[in-house]
Length: 132
Image (tube, rainbow, N blue to C red; front, side):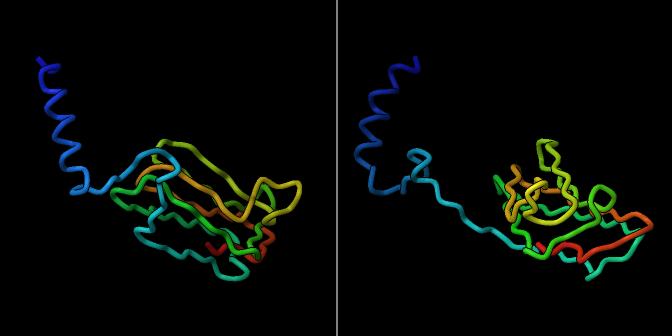
């Protein structure tokens, strides 16, 4: 029964092609749209024994792009930022941004319509902190 609708629907879609904009043709036609923006920043230098948690939520979003300040720096291993996306994927960052031995680059992309952020510092040594 569905087959009987295919031809009339195809004909109709050609007749009204200019009425409705094409939202997505393929990946080349997809353009990022900024729905909202957050700025999170620690004190510089951050305090010892600190725990910060924040949830960024944007209904309708498919991803979050986080751009880090070049000064980002935490005590490697012991003080860290942790991001968890809507799929449960985690990224833990510590040390100095863009250090060859570090996995922390200036941008990170997370998928879904919300993003959990956590920062933890232990009881000794502190650095500049974070800003993104």
